[in-house]
Length: 323
Image (cartoon, rainbow, N blue to C red; front, side):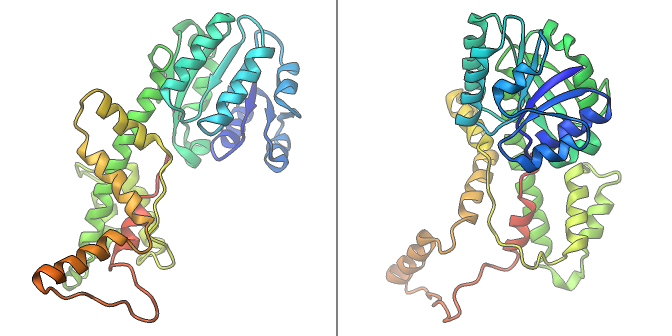
């Protein structure tokens, strides 16, 4: 098939490579010339702008937008809506808020432009192993693009499918990422706990490999933990700083909006916030207050500066998102 791809970041560029290997024709655009050059060398057709992508495609056009959530995606889909034609297909494959997808679907429906929102998973590993795709939109449109999805997925008949109407794709991906936060947090805490029993001479990397066979918690994440700890058992040089990409927040907001209890996800997100605080003021205040009312000891910082609690770096490394 012939498809336009706008956005060649960590996932977009790798998805294009996977499509090219399968013989699809891809027109690409990105603001970073080096990312464009990488896939052009593999057979992609370069485009100088969003408008140029559309010009180089024949109706009915297929344009996949793979940009960060918010303004970049909003502006690009707005521009595309003004230059594509009736029955062309626009795809938002980034991790956007499902409410944005609903807005885009309504805007494009007025112009009889078809739209799919796709929650895409497997990060940088998708190029080799395939991408999980949760698709929101009309089944007829999805069937028309079946060759694209069968190429991008782990297997033609696995790892992708329609999950509902427009908005459902990004909604399901938000739920997916909220669950990911909690799973990562639990694994990180478990491996940190094992550090506090040196008398057992535990080998966490080996334990991760053992758990991969026959264990209830076997998973790809455990495989990654085993790799990480085999390469750097103490996670030396890793700062205890964990980012989030917004989807966990959206999941918790949905919990609040629907009165759904999500304590694990909420606490996992809160821990990420805490990991970014170099000198938590609240913790200092707690220490001083306990001294004031109970005479409890207050630890004074050394001249060399404060240090993170033992094991905290390990936890933070394993909390890094794999979206």
